[in-house]
Image (tube, rainbow, N blue to C red; front, side):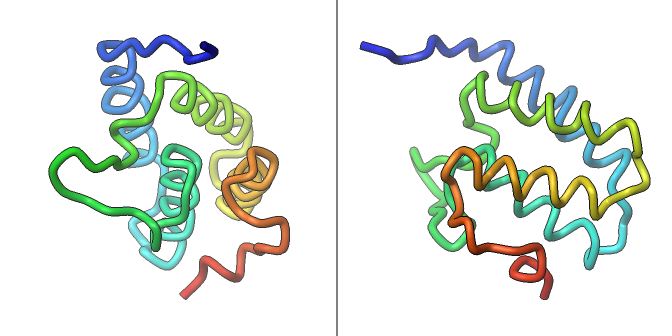
Length: 115
């Protein structure tokens, strides 16, 4: 079976000490900018769009993602950190990564996440 090993302690550290902290520190407080980025982050971590997510007992959300998924997101954030004020670039990197991994359809555009 080709099931990747999960490291709960590493996942906890990656999510809370890295991903959540990074997004909290670097994303602007303006919800019009941060909401689409957070939604794309969630898609990358959960493998599905927010409309398909369920919450509650034993349901998944982005905090329960695999260590590998979190490492993918750290790579995306590292790539973007070269230009940390270009939020459009971050959104595009996330959108393209989600398309590449097949989590969203190729016809999706950034404007689909702006409300």
